[in-house]
Each structure stands twice: as structure tokens, then as C-alpha cells.
Image (tube, rainbow, N blue to C red; front, side, top):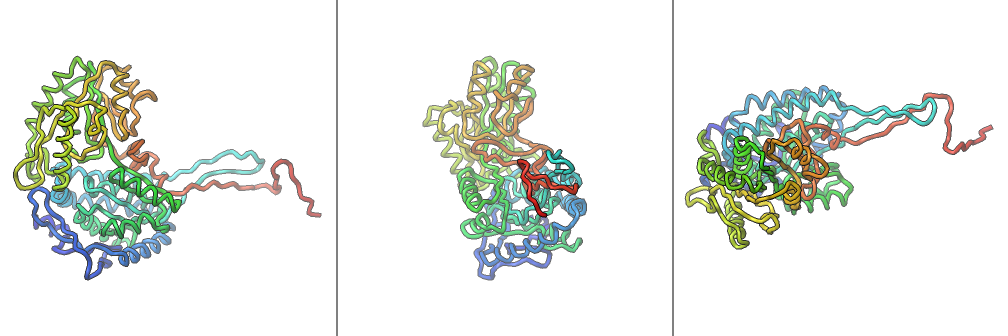
Amino acid sequence: MNSILKELGINDINHGACTGKNNWFSNTNAKQLKSYNPSNGELIATVSMADESDYDKVVKTSKKAFSDFRKVPAPIRGELVRQMGEALREMKDPLGSLVSLEMGKIKQEGDGEVQEMIDIADFAVGQSRMLYGKTMHSERPDHRMYEQWHPLGPIGVISAFNFPVAVWAWNAFIAAVCGNTTIWKPSSSTPLTAVAVQKICNEVMSKNGYDGIFSLLIGPGSSVGEKLINDKNIPLISFTGSTSMGRHVAKCVSARFGKSILELGGNNAMIIDETADLTLAIPAIVFGAVGTAGQRCTSTRRVIAHNDIYENLKEKLINAYQQVKIGDPLNPETLMGPLISENAVSDYENAIQKVKSSGGSIVCGGSSLEQEGNFVLPTIAEVQNEWEIVQDETFAPILYLMKFSTLDEAISMHNNVPQGLSSSIFTQSIQNAEYFLSHRGSDCGIANVNIGTSGAEIGGAFGGEKETGGGRESGSDSWKQYMRRQTNTINWSSDLPLAQGIEFKLD
């Protein structure tokens, strides 16, 4: 552990606010935020949290940096992001290890998350030369119309513990090529990964003569977080977290006529029809439900299986679950690490009790492990879709199994939850696949065929509908959310025709 921390520049006590290489700061009397290893409860390191005065310093620096950075041509801004990608490539192994150490996902997933950062950097570099607007024909003679896109200003990014670095990169790198600066408030559960990333940012910014393009604020949500979401200096807030907190963020940001990107809860389902290839479906279900210990917003929560294959599917899933090795996430043989906290374990246990009290049957797992660390057994339960516990999202490795007879019934069950992030169908029927993808099918922002619910690609716009929030991040045309649209009309004639034939006699 010490070697990982040393390589990334993590000290025993770290400052919680930063705007550049030589600008780490926090109040000497600041509240201390301790980061613990969820695998064994050991203290990793401590962060001195930023307070409201630190917040003001960060915002002031970020605003000043924006006023200059927006003047920089977009391809040159892209070069800065390209260098960020190269710096992350060099630090992929230790940073991936720190993600595993602090968050609890297995090493392969920790490295994979850093790879997402690298991939979005590559994507953003290309995007920096494709900030396109449209040219439109004017109804007026000798006039031209077009639209263009301008940067917004300092962007606030509030990220969650489950993807402690990738989600920041999705926002920060796209925002940067658009000409914005970014202020990052990471989860209080994973502050050290944010400190490590900021140090990487600092080296790249310093090399290019920049300060304040990427800034960090680690502080209490009740003070620093509230200032961020209510600050008129921050035109856009990207928030990843719970639906309940998302409602609060949306209310505060909209009250000041700001913009928000909300990535909230998911209650993702797979439909397994009677034609499905189970050799494809089983690994997808297990990875989707057990990966990151079920703590992804795209985790597979529900499997809706056709009556004809239900028992066979259940048997194969139980067999696969018994092969899941639980333990130290840095051990290459481990397939599932711990939950993030003791509270998360309690939520898991409460969900199991609600399943039982509702009349559900636990067919696999169903208990926490009596050992050090926040470990639980991956669980499969037979339930009814309408039960309250199934309608809610529990951030834990609990998979709900249900039966269906017709595809219409399956889609109705699939859509009948408050969330709408990711979805999937496994089928060999082109009719069923196309039906699922049609306007009558999945109501989610992501809909897949013969691939699981988790593992979104950075080239696509990531996000969902309903209580998932409706925001979009990463690829496709998500860059437009970090800019403001402007319509321009140019009169290149010597006349000025007025509407409805109105004329003014000037002589």
C-alpha cells in the first residue's frame, strides 16, 4: 500500500483544495476526512477538508483561468487533454491500484476505470476539432444564418464513490476542449483518488503554463457542496449520485437558472427470452450483477426470464455464483471485493430482510460475511416486480429473478420501475430484438441486445430517463451541454428589409 501512495504523491495528511501545482491549501484547523480501506478497515490517509473560504479561492481562480482559457483555440485545448491522457497512461497501474484500495473494486476494474479516463481523453482530442455549428438559409435576401457554440464557464463536477475518477474525466476533458474550467468535488468516501488525479493534472497544467483549469474541492456537502450548487458563478453542475440528492441539486440549480447534468439511480433489467443463448447471457448477468460488488449505476438488478428457460437459467446462475471468489480486491484471483462502507452492508442486509418479508425466496447468498472488511455474499432472489424493494435501487450485489410468458409482459415489467438508465435483451429473434429497441420497447437511455447492462462505451452518450435524471455525459453530442448555443444572422446586402413590409422614411 505504501508504495502505491508514494508513487502517487499521497501523504499521511493531504490538503483538500487545489488550483494548480503550487496551490494546495486548506484551513489549518480544518476538519479531517479519513479514508479507510473497505477490505480491512485500515486507515489509508487523511485529507484536511476545504471550507467556505477555500471554496471562494478556488472559484476565483477558476473564473480567472476561464477568462483566458476560452481564448485558446480548441485544438490547442485538445493538446492539453492529450497530454493528460499520456500522463494517465504512465500512472495507470498505481492509480488503478489506488481505486481498488480506496473504493474496493477489483484491480482489473480499477485499471479499467483509469483506461476509461485515457479513452475519453483520446475522444476529447478528436472532439476539439469537431465543435461544429450549422449554417441555415435565411428567409431574407442576401442574409446568412448560422449557429455557433461558446464555452460556459467554470463547471462543477460532483462525483460518486463507485467510479471515483472516470466520471470526473468524462466531464472535465470534454469541458476542457470546449473552453471551460472544472471544479471537482469528489465523494467523501474516495478523496485520495481525487488527490492523486489532481496531482497528475497539476504536472500537465504546469508544463503548459496553466493554473486553475482543473481544480479540486474536498469538503463537506453541507457547506462546500451547497455553495457549489447554489453559486451563480457555476453555470453547469454535473452531479452523479442518489435520486434523492439529485432532486435537491436540480432544484437548487434550476432556481438560479443554471444547467445541470444528472446521473442518478438505475434499476437495470435484462430480458432473457426463450431463444436466448445462455452461454452469452450467463456471463453477462453475473458480471453485471456482481461487478463492483453491485455498486454500479448500470449494475444488473433484475432478470426477467421466459417461463420455458427460467429453471435452467436459475440453475446455471447459482452454479456461476458459487464460483465467485470474494476477497482482497488487489488479489488478481478475486472476482468481487467489498462494499464501500458498513452502512452499505446494513443496506444490503435490510434489503434481504425486505425480500423475505415480502414473500421472496433467497436462492443463493443472502448474508454478510463475518470477517474484517465490508464483505457480503452475492445474492439471487426470486421476487415479484411490483414489490417495493424491487422498485427501489439497492447498491449491492442482489439480483432479482422473475418470470414472463409474452414479450409484451416482459417489457411492461421491465419499464414498470421509476428508473430508466440501462437495459438489455438476450434473444436470437430479430423481431424481439427490434421490438425491444423500438418506441414500444425499453424506456431507458441505454438499450442493448445480446450484451449486458454494464460496461458503457465512452463514444456513446451515457445517461438515462425518468428518475435517472435525463442527463448525458461522455460521447456522441454530449459536448453541447458544456457550451451555449448562439444563432447569428448576417446581412451582407445594402438593404434592411423589415418584417411585414414596414418602412421608415428617413428623408
